[in-house]
Amino acid sequence: MLVLDGVDKTYPNGVHALQSFSARINLGEIVAVIGGSGCGKSTLLRAIAGLDRATAGTVALDGESVTAPHPKIGIIFQEARLLPWLSVADNIGFGLDGLPRSERHSRVAVALARVGLADKAKAWPRELSGGQAQRVAIARALVPQPEVILLDEPFSALDAFTRTDLQDHLLDLWADTRPTLILVTHDVEEAVALADRVLVMRPRPGRLFEEIRTDLPRPRDRSSASFEDVKRAVLHSLDLSLQRHRHQDDDLLNAGAGI
Amino acid sequence: MAMTLDNAAPVTTVVAPAPRRARLWRGPVLGLLLPLMVAFGWETAVYLGYSTGRLVPPPSRVFATLAELARTGELARHVAATLGRVAAGFGLGVLSGTLLGAVAGYWSLARRLLDPTVQALRAIPSIAWVPLFILWLGIFETSKVALIAIGVFFPVYLGMMGAIRSVDRKIVEVGRAFRLSGPAMIRRILLPAVLPAYVLALRVGLGLGWMFVVAAEFMGASEGLGFLLIDGQQLGKPAQIVAAIVIFSLLGKTTDWLIEIATAPLLRWQDAFGRHDGEI
Image 1 (spheres, rainbow over the protein chains, first blue to last red):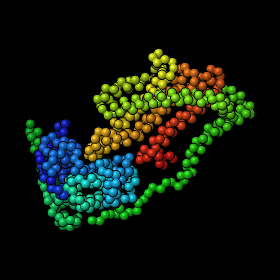
Image 2 (cartoon, helix red, strand yellow):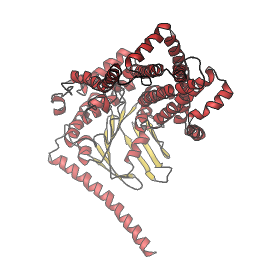
Image 3 (cartoon, rainbow over the protein chains, first blue to last red):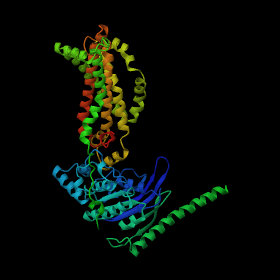
Image 4 (cartoon, chains in turn brown, blue):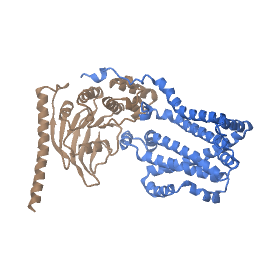
């Protein structure tokens, strides 16, 4: 279980990006974190990844505190971030350095086949399309078999068709070993299509606004009425989170005008 | 969950343009056309008596001089002397440029401490060091090697420092996410990322090394290709001067090509414009 307790982040420039965020996320759960820009969702993800330290609060995986990148936590970024000087196969095997060669090869081969790129094993990253590159990045994160995989808007740079395709593909891969997925996104449909829980954040400072359980059976039919209902609920919540914020701004403005 | 048109779609591979073979030879041949025509034209002009070719020797006379130098073993001696100086100077320049460039690229404190001084020294025309080097190091080999090393040092230093500083932070973060140790980060991320710019810096450095060896050999040498140049001027032997120039260009091109060949397997991944159909 991943436990976030009062995670708080203020950047050195004074921006209060995340305010006292707490959540408990079970193994195998898929959680989407959604919100407008500046709501601290990427900050949250980077704190869990151990890439940036929280100013206060703790992140703990199975009772073990996470302050630096952790072997059981993998991350997939918005850009594929493949190493251009390694072949596709070597990119996928990048995190398997400690394993014997034969084990590494077989795991990479399985992963390559699983993401449908077996014929690209020896290709260079530059020869891949955006969607293919992101699949390699997914394989690279999955292959060390982490318990938790963090995804930072992983499909937002792709076209709509490839995006839907990769979302389905991600669920397919997830079903193999059922790791915990924490997905930061600003795409409501993506959140509802993938997640068990959607955490709606509100900005300045970033904090949790509302938690919405999707409770939809898998595989999910994106055109069904129940899917639409959940989508509408998330949209409504997002809208409220921003409105309340806007009112606050108005109050501030009014106060300012009064002086 | 269906996977996917993306997968099922036929894989289009980029096919090399058809007239590739024609291109391979047409490039060099086209490039040779002009110099060959000029050489042939001059040869004919001298042969037909339009000029004596005393100050501008025709190719046949240059080749005769080269052959004579080669026969007596003089050529080998001069080439060996020059190559030795370039090798020593290049080695020293690369070593110091790489070390200091790496340090200044990696640690910003070292850069702030070191770089202004290096940049100030770089602004000095390197030939201006010659009198001082001769006073300090004597007129023989040491001062020559030092001058060449100075010429090589600056491009290598700048190339190395710039390359390290421009390594993509996002790629470094991948290394961090996979918990690479310091040495592993250098070996698996920084070195490969830095290599293309570094190789380019080596080639620029080598070019300067060849430039500076001439200057070094002008300041008093009893052997070397630069000596052949001065000797040819003082004794009025233009054919010998041109012969030395030809050898310089051959050696410069060959050593540059050796670096290119040696590093090509390491840089195959690059998506460089010039490597594909950049040449029009």
